[in-house]
Image (cartoon, rainbow, N blue to C red; front, side, top):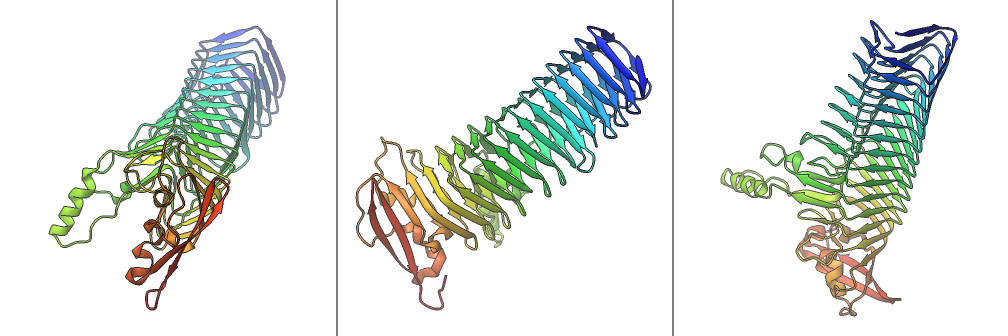
Length: 485
């Protein structure tokens, strides 16, 4: 290091450290043994470290204040292209920039059992050959990063966490952005692993991506045992190739938040992997729990880019007298067996799918709970029902409102048929249909009482109650033994 501080104090003002190299940690400055440093108007350029902290290394409860400064083109051989913090160290960046730095993990910064704060600062175009293109957080729950009015932009990781990688630590974003970040595998914007936690407040994740076909979560990857909360936060234009914009294996909570203008395309139907026939913009997998309150899923779409796969595999199965492959189950929100989705006062607006469901697909043994859910259906022909549940799914739907554009004139029965299908019929849930004419009394939309629900002996009826600008439809399925629901 150009400067090595052992238990002392350091102050630099309008200075430059360039082309310095360290055989271990801290290419420009190393702070150890409870050292304190304040850097104002400083430029740290093209510094390298063989191990960690290409520009700055902090350990042993050391403290750093970096104000109105620039860290550029720095590189570390292992972790923390610009900064490495470990051993209860603390670094605070104010009005500063970290650009064009790289490391194996934590291209911009690596935080291990320490604390990093960024205020009105940015990390741009940083790279990691493994995890955390922008920031990596570790330390068994003791590492933490707090970003306020800050930006992580154009960060890339070759494995997980293009913008931020959280493994056993805590991330808090307030009024901040993760913009155009990417990874080859999981979590283009952010990857949160078991033991990790993140909360985003009034923040945005925009135009993030995964480059590999089987990469999970172009915006957000929430692994088993992880927890993520979004409050007044927006995920936007984060498209995915197969496994979702938001991949939920742990716990995800959206409060007054939105996921908008995202597209999920299946391009993995090569014929060998049935798992590639599931998924969506938000994919809740086995053991995952997603809760949306006062939130919106807007203009999100799924496309089956290999539609011939299912037909060819079905024909092959028939010729060999084998079971046909499962039907595709794509949807803007898809819930796998033993996954749980809760929707409260949530709106789906202008969402579509080619197969599965145009809003929510619920697999057998999956759980869906809704209250005051609004479906604003596009006026398109040939799209699947908004909600579809396989037989054996566990559903509770209350106060479901279904509306259509002003220029669309579908009758209430047709509108109801485009709202729910499959196992949802067993609930007798109230469905509010906005617009259209009063349907024939006692005539239920076929999708509300499918034959698969109560076998062929089911008697299906519907009760209609006039409401202000709407109709309340309650479908009832009566079955005689042995054909019980």
